[in-house]
Length: 178
Image 1 (tube, rainbow, N blue to C red):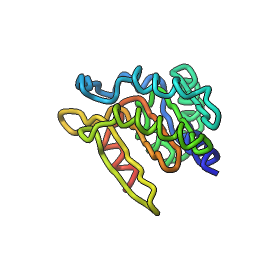
Image 2: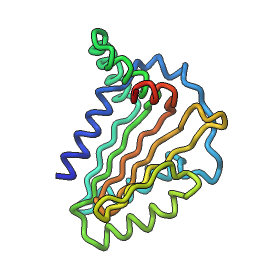
Image 3: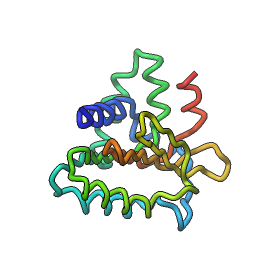
């Protein structure tokens, strides 16, 4: 079930991405040196467990995202809500989903331990607990508060790690929510 949900979440995100030409209009900012969002460190974590029994990894890189943006942009021409969703995620560069729900308890513990070294309270945006399962969302906020760079959703109890690499405009997110 969790695998299906992770896969559907990844597909949903892909269906709402924007044109590859929009990336230049998103402002960029550098994450601090202590940030968890060294893409290399997060990818190293995922790669170190990708061949382990019970761990499934899906990664869509920049070429795949570019193709998805082009297709989605064309599909959203006649739908106002879809166009707003395209604006929300126009800065999405790559997507990585790691599902480790079927891994052994030892593997789950190792993943949680390694992840806890990467994810700092400084970058914690939201944390929820539902039926004893904690889900944490991390990101780097720009100095002006207008953009967030990279989202990581981590839920060790449900065995899910979702990494959205890119820069997202918070005004667009708020307009989409309204």
